[in-house]
Image (tube, rainbow, N blue to C red; front, side):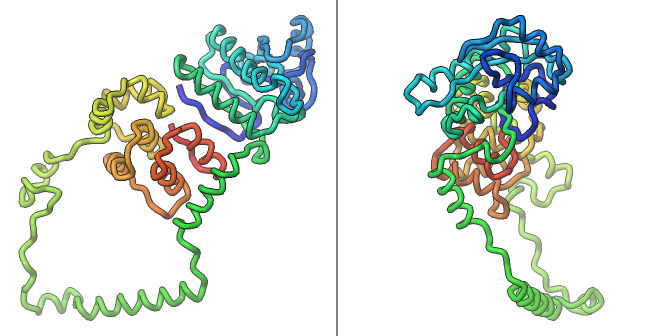
Length: 349
């Protein structure tokens, strides 16, 4: 199942389980911990009092009480002490133990905060890297919908080099906004061009009096076998569909179905629909996710998108960011989604 980033209040999420970045007493505190205790109600504190606390890196389970989530997994992240006190291993253990507990409880969806990145002082970019690494490793062999909840934009940091490179690529590709003077000039030119076209191509009444000199229609290259046939015959000349091209590319790349939909950050049920329906029309992010999963070249990705009725253009940030990663041979869908999230774009999958 897929992994997404979401900017939200974790206490409002209607999922099987949310993870609480707790302190060792499990009795509530500040930040996410305090917010979860307040939203769940006093019954949560009473329940946690019987759990006997929790060691750093470990995880314990409680009901969600007044929360929309059924369960809360409480895990204690490490306090940052410069990175030389086993902080990375302890933080990784928080994610691994929480995910193992969610799996044992039969949860299908779980939402994490960015553990230790608040009052505990863990550098946010490093905390994010650990979270993504552990979640990615877990999803290679398990089916679980995982959301990493970011409370505000300041909590989320891309590596400086990536942010700088993507921003520069966007600046090169995005059209510069036209000034009012430029727009007025463009409108004037457009009107002059329209006037010339009206002079060249007379109105219908004038055309009726002109001799018929139009050349016969040229057969369309798109329909070489039935250019002069009826519409029904043309429709029988349909090209390969998105689903058919996708399945062909999976075979050509030597991937299994499971490897493909996991690399695409796509749910197994959605992939089954695509496989079983040759006429399936995916959303644009889903189509691009499969292009990324299959590590298609830019031309191949454009062809796959075209099968689904979409295109890549330089008129919006989403398309340009996708082009940046494909052009640079970077098919890491998690890093692509991190970047899309940082630029407030729709995620893949």
